[in-house]
Length: 507
Image (tube, rainbow, N blue to C red; front, side, top):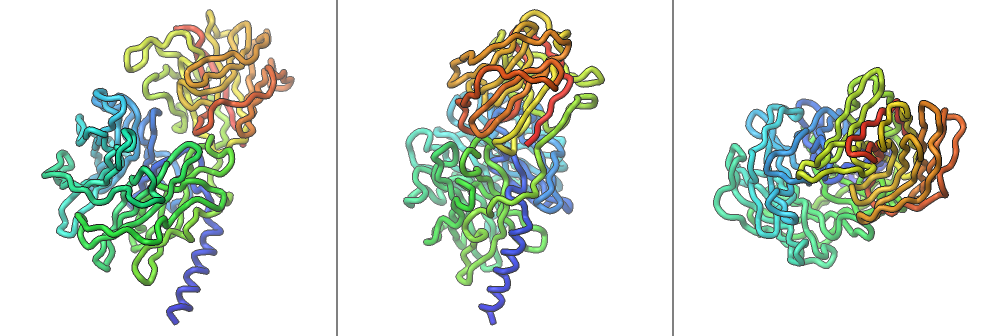
């Protein structure tokens, strides 16, 4: 009878998997954290060097998602740049977000921070200082209560950046989350072949069988050739000893997805667990970043957990498209973002979007006349798309140029830009800038630019009216290999202001 029930359960899960989109959320949303809050799911993800930082997402069912806020529009004073791996949890009558940030005191060693708020939408108040740093840096925080109900914080020592093993530690945490107590204790470290140089991203649950289960990720997370996967260990006590599952990893790449990991395990309030994790699409999918997937969590007869069938669910339609058409007539859409260190001026209204390159970065350096002085970005859900924008040529002054680009960061991008006289196709590869093609700017009042992406191949075009298009140069291969965004750019002049009359993306 038990075998029959188990078979029926597996059939039910298989049918359910067919109707769930894969991914459930397209675009780059790495290192997800998800909880069930106020009748809905609340989620955050790594935001890297983009602002607003640590976007807050909401979903009624883990399939339909919307952006409802952000933890930081401006970074805390102690943070230099880059927000990694947040973890949201209930704290008292409100919420806390633990995160990793690069402090102003270091260029390599990350610190842990914490911010609190009455609701997932905020307003969020940062502690104002690091909660913990460490010689090799500390990342991937995870709060959990031990068997005595005491609050603890787990994290990973980011020692792989320095060629060392990567222990996961635990340490008592005050109830207000403002300070760590006592001394840290090592729980596990990378000592299995599949884990390679890394264990990280701990997530702990406790079951009625008396065991704590620690899900964790191992091996290289990012960039080709990644080998990321998820394993599990268990212990009667939070402080150990922990025993790793002999069948690890319990989630690895396959079914059209690569390098799944950094899983979160929200409970729907009735005891049902779902694994929410990121993964890259196979092939050229690295350019779209780490997208959000889900799989059901079940438990074997011996108590050890399973995530789906051990592989991510095969790509399936249903996730909301990231295609858009924006005339900028109203407030700036929540999907737009900008570099954390180079905040552009931006104003929308009946005249469109005015994008202004800042004179200086947050670190004090001058922005200068770079073509991407001001950047406004949106996530991409596909590596095959067509993006267009319309620039008001009459509003351009001096050498100011507006454009479109496929943008990873300030050192890696490819794009097209137009000033009053010429249109150029250009790229920056590992910080080295190169002009690929040029053409005359149409003498019309409006200049239409188009960027067509097919994997890593790009084609750029210009038009005076959006009907008759002229190719600028040949089809070219982007130097970027991973995680790009579609960006509007304003630059070419230290005081560049560019008026965009519209922008669109079709997938």
